[in-house]
Image 1 (cartoon, rainbow, N blue to C red):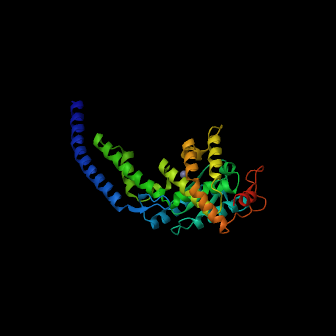
Image 2: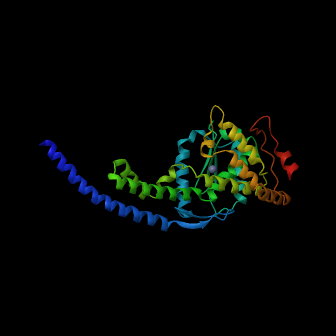
Image 3: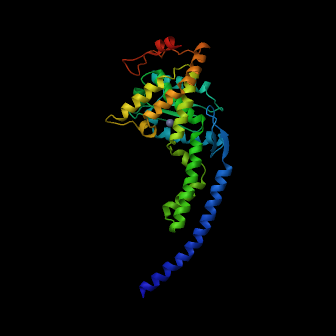
Length: 311
Ligand SMILES: [Zn+2]
């Protein structure tokens, strides 16, 4: 008897669910179309690739700044505000941003004291560098490789592009799970979160391999325009690959695959970057001497020599 009652109840819930699944599917398809149509179409500088992004540049700036404040607030005690390394991070960042195809971002470059070998950027030109990656960078040109790569991600608007891809993927997944039978509370939460624009900006989504590759290529051009020898990128990624095989694989290497094909691509793009580098050094954009007392790696401080020898 009891079993029968339960069976009826389950069946009734079944009909209600079919109706709500149909409605949900209609909403999801409509929402996917809305997301795609609202997305702005634009062209990435240097590579000329056409892309669609989730947010306008204004929204990226606002939401990126908010997320940056939130993330930095969590590591407030580790932020390095003064000293030669913080100065160098700001200087390298500002030099590269100045020659990049800057749509008018309010750039910020923050050094965070942490052994983590990592760096990241948020939409709108908000960059963070962990002091652990300075060991891999070794010198100002090595640091320029990382920072130009991050600046390239920001200018190519990979964050907002990734966000649109993620939203569409999640809508697709929700449609599948709705069709397969019902939504658990966690999934319902995801649907609701999707409607809150920018909810995902607080999460640092890993970029796709194509985006990484694009940031490498654009980064080479930008560092060269700023007067940094782009050949330094090969050494940087070789050291990153070596660190990857070490006892503590760097976080940067998990999101930035440092493999042979990446270095091969960089070699392929070097001639166009070297042209920019020679133009920059001919017009007098030479490397500044490092701030007094700066030793990213005690044994190796080749800044001044490298600039005059290859300029
Ligand atoms: Zn990257």
